[in-house]
Length: 201
Image (cartoon, rainbow, N blue to C red; front, side):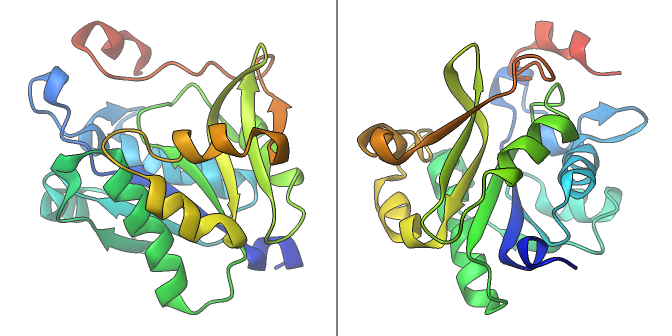
């Protein structure tokens, strides 16, 4: 395990209930024959994240049963219905509690299967220690994944409300943010509505 692999932990936000998908939890949507959350974890691992924390919420017990996540740290977010901000806070808190020396979190969303290992690896390559603040960009527009150095975790957690996640914090700290263009290797669509299911294989 390299120093970077020891210091950067992957975090998959996979708690959503898929309200606009008729109440189908996104983690359990099938992609390439397996639950979507498995795909999200495999992308982080292929990009170089050896430690991955997965934040669960909607039907967490079913996700544990159906998805092969035995080598991940599973984090329950009982407040998942209040929005993605609660999941981001839970994920960052789990890294602190783990006491494993993580100095940054590489955060991805379970419902963006068009973002593969190449894009994630580019963001990971921009890691420069606990002060790092890095985001993938698509034609210059900030997107996911994001790499959040531990020096920023408290501020991000305080600003993460509703479905905003780290958005407000990143906007306020735009001068410190490194954008890594990934539009040539990834497609940042979300699986939010029934018509988006065409993106799943």
